[in-house]
Length: 331
Image 1 (cartoon, rainbow, N blue to C red):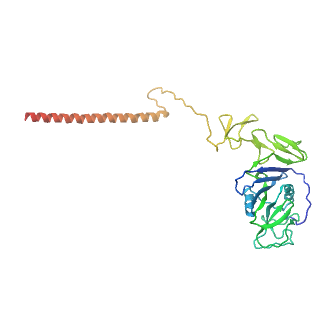
Image 2 (cartoon, helix red, strand yellow; image 1 turned 90 degrees about the vertical axis):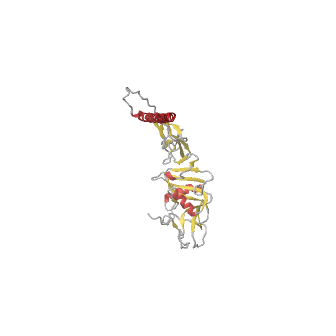
């Protein structure tokens, strides 16, 4: 459905909003932003807008969103606009969105989008943007957005303060560590029992947390799943069964071990061999030993035979010498 190019009021919507703040350490490449914050809607199919801080150009920002199975934010729907209104309170600076001027085109100051196109090819917008400058441009330019919702045209090779991505819930700030409990905005708080394990009321919402040795499920942070931060951990009792974290194998009865972090240990197998009842009975396991014994017997026989052969020739030679000496004396 095409987006309308008219101004629409921002309506309050009764929906659950998930806010996740995620941080990463220093020394990472440009595609891993210094800080990532997400606002997600659990209404229908969970979608999120992530605020990614870190100075990057437009192309790098676009690739970073694709790496997270998403795309640069395109304010072409009312739901995206509502999520952005919540996230805009966290904006400090200018952030790339998915709007660019097609190659060979010039901006049109009389059009709502000034001739710029969303990178997905979607048409229009649900509200009238507020542009920062009023100069016609005919070179490659892209658009950044600030906290006061000012739209700025700038060369695509410029480095903005960050970028905004549209992703699904399970891919929001993917690969980065959670720095504090997830906040859900809800007027009912913990009363409906929305969390699988722990729930704590906050003003206008609630947070979910997990018991020891559990972590929030990345597909739904209200659910929890077993977790082991080491190569080997005791299994967890659930409904009378020993449970291991995902990717771990149960070993030694009540332990879980990560096969990718080291060899899986298994109890040693001890074999007991029953002595043969008679000399004519050979076990299959004793065949290699018998063959080895026969090798030694053959070697010994060869050595003894060699000794006899050598002795035979020595004795024969001595006799020949004695006969030769006797013939000489007679002569």
